[in-house]
Image (tube, rainbow, N blue to C red; front, side, top):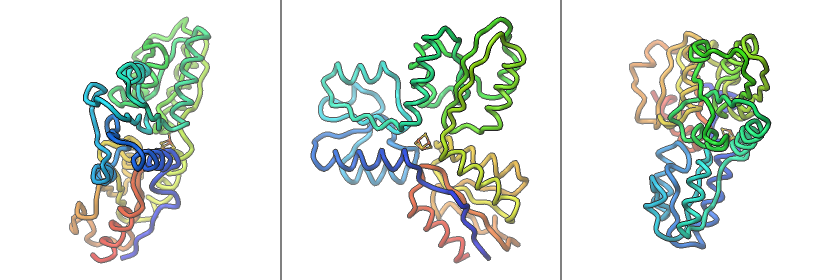
Length: 277
Ligand code: F3S
């Protein structure tokens, strides 16, 4: 059985940057904690814990030392609370996420009603909504969008960085046809787009697709959706031991892709297990 890895897969610029920032501070500081998972990958979070970097779910749980804001960002209110509590704040928000915050804040200042394409429960989306003064509307998909009356509105549209460009385009097109004015920024990051493009190109060429990444990783879940849309049996795994040999019966070529928070060593372990089966 042959295993083909997508042309672009695995860790992105923003995740690497966040890890480097934490590594550099953890060797010189005491009591370093990340606010929620630094990145959406349980294996990396476990490794950080082993190196003395803990994780808290709220600012109130960290009483001293450094609080790290993860690559997907947080709300301005949360950062203010951490500063008021006397904590050192290490802001590892990815610059592409920070760019969405800036766009959302500018749109509000210019009098637009801000709309965010994204998952309402995701921390990144909560941060974007906060940057827009907590008045932004969230739409998950075209169905949500079609249920809203846009007539007469001046809409400023941005996206969670890990959404699908096709979905963003369809939503923008619908709003443009209904609203008085639309100013749309495609804020999906280039890493997400490259990985989605590579997965879409590979999926039709293989018998089975394996997508590696945290189950809580938005961009990994998008890759799974894209591979499934190609009508290829697709399985989302976090680690090599998740793979069931039953999935591969009769498969001659298996495709492999990985989310932007999946480390290279996890990808290589999955690849080795597939080749051994
Ligand atoms: Fe940043 Fe995009 Fe990665 S927003 S964290 S480069 S997936």
